[in-house]
Image (cartoon, rainbow, N blue to C red):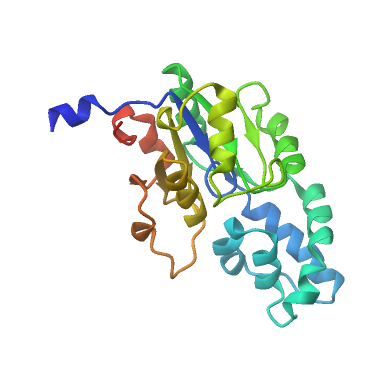
Length: 228
């Protein structure tokens, strides 16, 4: 037990998912789909209906907002979704409680941190100065930065390579099964962010993450991170 605790500590590098892990962006997403619904003569959408699918991406969110519309038609609305979302970006969402303290704890320990998200890079990059992260975030990889996106391991492996570390030096933190799949495929340790967005039927225990964490505050403790 004592030896195991000695192997725990803040990782050399922590890579994070963005939406549902660092940022509660559901309010921005809700404003986006509500604008789309209003343009089609529909009323606002309930947050509790949209929130579970935010980490699944634009197609999942438009499906939740317009379940009666065939997927082929809805998918043609993705450029509209992204255009409206860019206008709403950062206006309504906030960091999850405890994220700022966690990032400061990592930095105080000498750990570097970055973001690997499936959000288009141009949108994620616009958020960095809004959050004050443009000089703090060591690397930012979006869903369209490389030829593959999560759950493929390439974005995580590329991030480690650019930062000059091995996958074993890194931990990936995410709230969606795709995040943990990508980490496993990259042979990178992982943290399941239980505070994020999940469908009712999702079973985070089945994702095989190294540790499951209830709140960002818990990760201010070096011993909460996966063993190395």
